[in-house]
Image 1 (cartoon, rainbow, N blue to C red):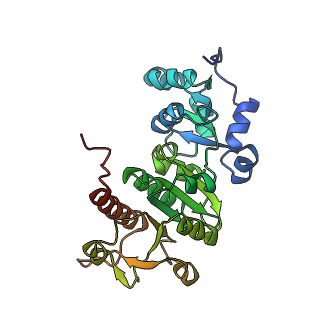
Image 2: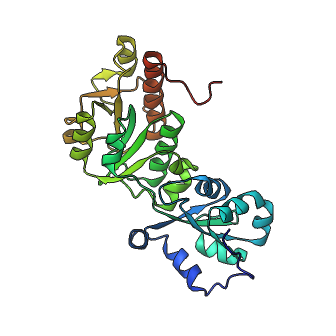
Length: 286
């Protein structure tokens, strides 16, 4: 079990300064560390076990939060993380949220090499090809996790996975499934296709309708959905790399769906079709 700091850590501590700098992408990349804020993210970070053990290496907590979330703090210490008791001002200084919840973890990067994802022969993958908004990226990651996807791939044209807003939006799902980062779009598409995965671009202007594809029974095989920027969609050159461009039908008067909602619809459509074909079950099934 990791030791507990005997007293409140000073705001001028080098550890506080180092954690504060993790809000910046260049420092995250240099140290290969990122922030996980709030009880849910810290709980999942403490529970995750990878090749190097749990990614959680440090935990800053107010005295009140350490008492309120004693189970999480205990799990963090059991995972080998060092606990720093901190004042509310220190937590506010480290945190990137308006109303911190008293827990901020420092975690090691945990992205998975793209080659390992391909070697696992994935059946359902979300590819974030041109997603620039960190909140959207984290929410799509959460949707992929909920739909039972095998992996998520962020291309080099997408936002930083470890942006604090993306981590928060994933609500812990970042720690649940393999994620590859910085993969060139062409490499992602080529690699997945060579692994026997069908590439579908999700685009509101697609020439194929998702309902029609489901009715035709074309959705049961290994599939990767390629998602783009919410404002301007996928570039033509990226759409041309895929096997089909599919739109989510709008049956009402809404102009469109936001990225995360469209991603959830597409991923769940594939998950259901695959379960019908291959007997895969939802994690919620008894």
